[in-house]
Length: 117
Length: 220
Image (cartoon, rainbow over all chains, first blue to last red):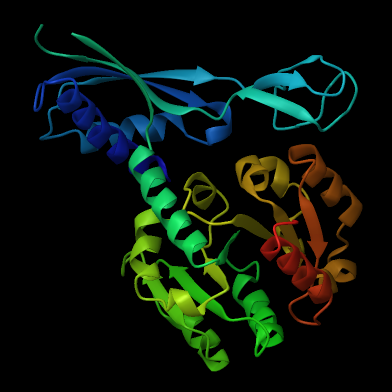
């Protein structure tokens, strides 16, 4: 249940970013996040926590858009692409454990929409 | 209006973790973030470890629990500076955050320490998600939990630098297939250092203490 902490951090970060863009306190209507498969985030739990915690904030009417991101990379040993369907970090082509990850561990606020021009 | 951000959601936590890391580096302190399920034996391993380090290494301890000071009381006899963090008296956060550690660091005599053990809240999921500024994460997996746990909780085992396989003294009774367990650990994290130990008999403690020395020397 780390989702409530993540939702609370997302709500603060979105308000911080709105202020940084010169719109402090502006109503935020949508936030898009990218969540890598390695992050062990349960989408339903994140949505539930977000919906509970956004009350009485500028994100009150905000929609949460979650983009998944698969674990992917390249094998450093044989160069084969690496995109395992489950948490096995061995190259399926040569069996090497030396893989370079290029995705799957993201936990980012990517973009958001605020009211106004 | 659309604003493009691309910023880590736990940015605020990670910033505080960076401050912790900087303060620990200033005082040349190696910090070990000890994580596991409840009951895997983190405190028992710490008891063995502190016993061995007494008079040799100046260690400090941060005890994280949802509630109670029972673990800190168990460790009090070693006379190492200890700070207890309770996340909430009636069932709070399931992990330690960087700011909880920041508060605890302020209560420790940092100039006198070389090694800091942070015993995280017992939980095989959430603690792995939060950087607290540690030098290394170490996961304790006890044999009764079963050989499949690395596959079921991959993040914890991916994030860790070493894994202590505790309760090795029970291997025969439980019929644990230790080779299969090791293979599961290797699949999830091929670079993980695996050290079989028993906090009860003391098995493996020499190897664990040697690994801690390597970590302090920047060689682990």
